[in-house]
Image 1 (cartoon, helix red, strand yellow):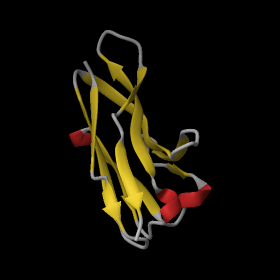
Image 2 (cartoon, one colour):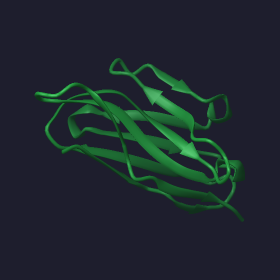
Image 3 (tube, one colour):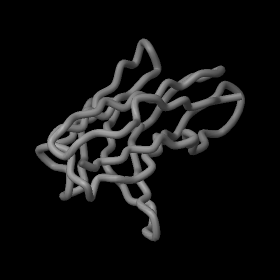
Image 4 (spheres, rainbow, N blue to C red):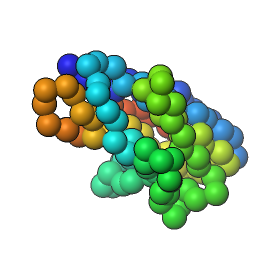
Length: 120
């Protein structure tokens, strides 16, 4: 059984920073292109950032220059450093990855979501 556990969300003022973490656990053989999505009230879930095994990154235009995704393969954990947060960044943030478990095909897994609220 694979689990993705997120942490680090909360309430922050505009211009502030937060760091989200996503820790994967279980009988994991490989983690492919982990990333972060977010969903604001009344909106569809959207891609925020992804990072490949070679540490190539991809960001939504709305967060470029403010957010940084990184990963620690040894800890099976990836992060989203969010700086200069804006009210429009308010959303539930979900981590995701395509994970290979020994003996089964790769599957997409999602965390439970963590709320990020940017407000004064």
